[in-house]
Amino acid sequence: MLAPLSNLYLGSAIISFLAALSTALTVFLITAPTQYDPYAEADAPPGKDGEEPRSADGKRRKVKTSVQVVVLGDIGRSPRVQYHALSIAKHGGKVDLIGYKESDVHPDIASNPLISVVPLAPVPEGLRAKSAFTFLFLAPLKVLWQIWTLYYALGYRTRPARWMLVQNPPAVPTLAVAAFLCFFRNTSLIIDWHNFGYSILALRLGAVHPLVKISQLYEALLSRFAAYHFTVTNAMAKVLEEKHGITALPLHDRPTKDFQPLESEERFEFLSRLPETAQYAKDIEQGKWKLIVSSTSWTPDEDFSMLLDALVGYSATAVTKANLPKLITIITGKGPQKEYYLSKIKALNQEKKLLNVIVLTAWLSTEDYAKLLGSADLGISLHTSSSGVDLPMKVVDMFGAGLPVLGWSKYEAWPELVTEGVNGMGFGSAEELGGLLVKLFGEDRQNLQNLRDGALDESKRGWDDEWDAVAGKKLRLVA
Ligand SMILES: Nc1nc2c(ncn2[C@@H]2O[C@H](COP(=O)(O)OP(=O)(O)O[C@H]3O[C@H](CO)[C@@H](O)[C@H](O)[C@@H]3O)[C@@H](O)[C@H]2O)c(=O)[nH]1
Image (cartoon, rainbow, N blue to C red; front, side, top):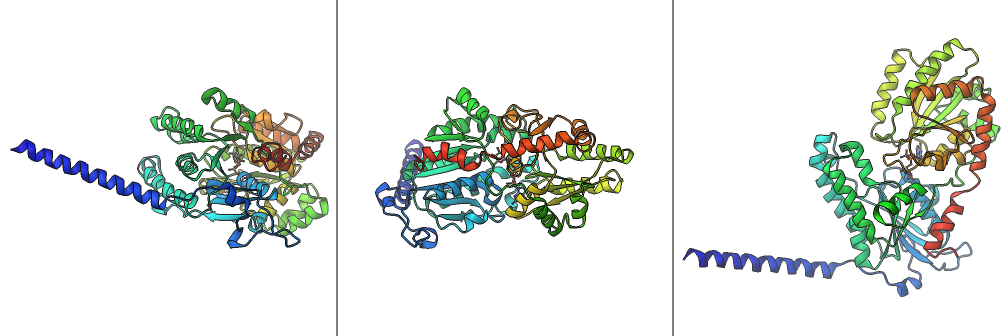
């Protein structure tokens, strides 16, 4: 008697499951995001806020293509993504720029009628992990939140586009959501590889952690859905080819026109205006103080202890050598480890270990960040590269401003960006960095000038040259 009853239960459970599945499928099909239609696009869809894009003479501007540009990060702190959007719009393409809106976006984006910024709903504070233990717990919930907000933004808050250009990393869940929606919306996916998601995860969990292996497989699998791939270095394109059989086009970061060296009058005026430098402007102008700049997102892949230790070493030497100038070091940027380093700087000051050196932090507008680089004497990069094959954008900014660079250089891609002794120099430890500072600001000032000339040379090939030749052609915006 029991067996037939359990069969009945099983049967009704299967029927209920199938009914639920079919209802879910029907709901999905009824509410599915609309598809990209090239013929409708040819009829120039409206631009931002429903306005029709018009050129300066008031004529209706023909939209040449449409692109969803996506970053699962703060748009204002994603320079490369912003430059993509500006370049697409410059060639007549319409852009939906999707990401978090935590800081101001580039001023040219805000004023461009062809670019609409679509902000993602921020991750609730309670889902942000504060330790490795809570990370394992909260990460899945955070990912679920991101899946929904991304899916909704890419599928419903934006019109279907010809292309979707996605920054990777973060790869989870970006690549999966992007690939799924591209399939349903008839959109071609392009992955812009800044680095590898799994190599960043390995910094937190260790290279042999199963989640790191799964993340690597996930990235390799999802990347198969893309029509094109861009990478920030040749070395990264080579890794993609060798490990995953993917053909990628290197599209190197290059400086935009925002970054220019400042003439001495403009430099003095800027330094006198900026609160961080105002009281030292005259001394900097006279060379009694030298201005060093580093920029960062304050993430674990940049060890600022190395710079602080080098400055402590410099300070000790400067006490005994009268020819060494005092240093004002400004570290710009926003990010998770800032408070940790601020307390380290405070402790070093209390211990009187930074006697001839001032270390400040700042977050500046895009214009002032560019002017600070254009006014400095030396730039520093502490980028360590989790994969060995990505490169620091900050060095590109510095070259644009004609600023020579000292950078941590113990990774494969470094020589793709900096030519040793020509536009910058590499170091591998705090002692080496401290030694270079003493040399360049002490007996070897001609060398510093030579490096400055090299950096200026480097600024000549700009972002537009690189973008037009690589992405412009693939998106069929440049002949
Ligand atoms: N407006 C403003 N921007 C700032 C400031 N300080 C830093 N930034 C921005 O923050 C960037 C440095 O952030 P990082 O996160 O340290 O970038 P990175 O290591 O130099 O480069 C990474 O991002 C690139 C592009 O997104 C990648 O191409 C590269 O491979 C790497 O992953 C700078 O280039 C600049 O755009 C500031 O005070 N104000």
